[in-house]
Image 1: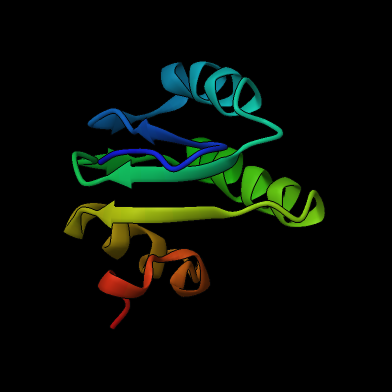
Image 2 (image 1 turned 90 degrees about the vertical axis):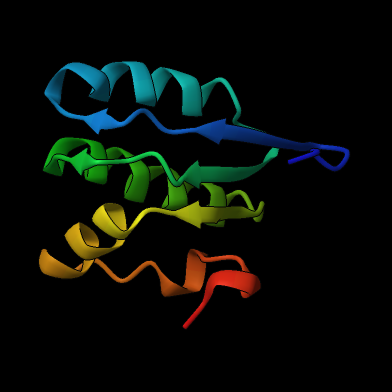
Length: 98
């Protein structure tokens, strides 16, 4: 996916566990000040801590009045979010909303 001006894209790792949380946080904070598009199509497993990092980032971007969206999500990512009660529908790109 080509990024528009001022927009950065991040592809999430297949396994987002405790070991990946600080790395993910660092990558996201390095993108602060830009609109962010997340590709979660490769995610096979996501833990609660990484989910918290993502949701905190979404809140931060909202407060900064910048875009924070998901361009693609895997079934595993979406099902895990739903299972623990996290609604990301407002963060999904129009093309993938159901």
